[in-house]
Image 1: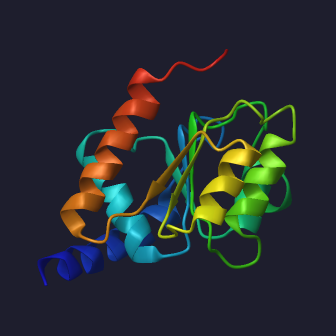
Image 2: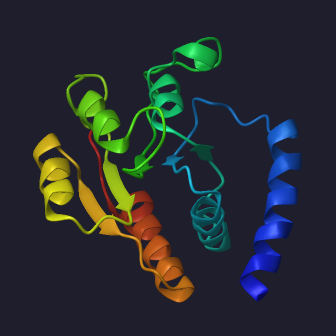
Image 3: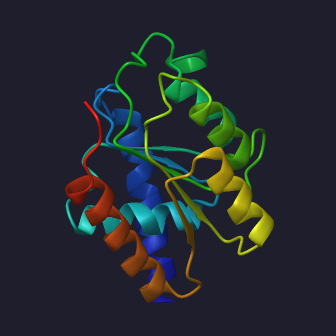
Length: 169
């Protein structure tokens, strides 16, 4: 019950932030691509708790992710695609364009090929895991079902990809 109360409070704060958020779209460090609002809110909460969400941007489907990354659609006037996120946290099962299609497009384009993509999904299916690694996923994490496990996974993921990992300049 405590988790639901937090989620309700977070939704209210997120609505306010979305209306007044003037973050430079070119300074995004984490792109979270997640259609499940509860999972997205918990991931954002955990990253904020450890000061890793200052430059986080959340999109709700694969189509919006591709528009953001490639600076097209509603992001054409606000983004320069030369500034890629430090890491993309990508769900697989999403509406419009699924995560596997997003991953395929990212890894087949020379401009985004080196951007780390972490699959963060509920699918434990070996064909999904194999397909993602074949396409160039940098990591595949199955979302833990309990709150504590999910929070710990997000914390560890953030520390590794934002603080420890070195990418080409």
